Image (tube, rainbow, N blue to C red; front, side, top):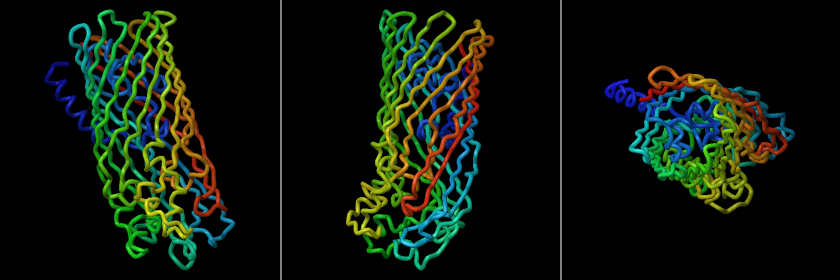
Amino acid sequence: MNVRSERVLLAVAAVLALAAAGNANATNGYFTHGVGTKSKAMAGAGTADPGEVIGLATNPAALIGVPERLEVGLAVFSPRRKYSTSESLANGQGSAFTIGPNDIDSDKEFFPIPYIAKNWVVGEQDAFGVAFFGRGGMNTHWKGGTATFDPDGPGPAPITTFDGTYGGSAVQGDGTAGVDLMQAFLDIGYAHVNASKTFSYGVSLTLAAQRFEAIGVGAFAPYTRTFAASGGTAFPTNLTNNGADMSYGVGGTFGVKWTPTPKFDLALAYTTETAMSKLDKYSDLFAEAGGFDIPAALNVGLAFRPTNSLTLYLDGQHIWYSKVASVGNPIQNLFACPTAGQGGGDFDACLGGSRGGGFGWNDVTVVKVGMAWALNDAWTLRAGYGHTEQPIDEDQMTFNILAPATINDHISFGFSRRTQGNNELSVSVMYAFDNSQKGPNNFDPTQTVEFSMDQWELEVSYAWGK
């Protein structure tokens, strides 16, 4: 590929990546299971030796040892989400609201996710790289169903049933409920290795953009700071059905890699929390007046080569979801809001406040194991398995209908085929096993909410080498 063609492809793929990256990708909480086709084929393992430029997104130190190349990839991601609610024993009496009973599958099940990465090797000890990619995100679109409200609670009176998961038709639209979060990242990385080629470090600057939209959640208006501060007279205008809003932020990653012998690589990389600008159109929904930062993450990795053709990988990842208020604050905080009908007096516990109720997610630790087997100079096979902790407790069900990140286990496999001119085709396939979570409706404890998800993804990438 000549320089002019490379620049055109880089520009086009960058635009596509920033426009579409990250939509609905949610395997480890709302982080994707890996970044890069080779890593994804090993369940996301490869922090210590990714063998691809896009690996700088996880550990910039791993730029060392990757030949100079341009990589372009496209994934088709398919999450299948559904939820159901049981009959209520309260029958609309004495509870803020009852959901259904409903039994609904979310639509919009296919999402394209592109990426592109390029590196430059400088001398024997330095490398630079740039990557556009999507990571994380969540999407639900619940069409149909009903919700019933109690006249003695903060909802509409008298006892009334409205269309939609949260009865959104009482406020706006047909009641269809859901959220759409898209995240895109531009990583600019640098790595240096010592003269003996045994220790390298790398740093990267991350520029992040995210696009968010919520529909059908107007039933939560009485739990907002805006509503409470007005004494119950002002409907919050930045809660729901406001179209897409954008936010932007800056973060970074520092990583190291140690190769004590040719058989071992050890690596560690820490990605800071990315402070994002406010989602102003949803300042009545998210804590901290529309705050939705991207949580910090720590990756550790080991690569072991028992033979010249086989490499085994063991990775661990920890994600600090609980440190982001809008994600980690428990939904129970809302009941301290003055207009929640439970005698509370804490305005900051209302939606939009600094302690506003959120999804109540826990931090998660992910374990990933993988292998790469080089059949010959042209073909390499890969496979992997990943397990993540459940971020959602059974007492955090009602909001998490919007973000049912229930996945615990996933498997993957794939291959690379080296072609003429050091070019390379790579393919990965992932399947995340169906998993469910069940617990009481936070606004009607006599009712049970259950949601579940399974996923699959196919990703194909091509690299042009020198």
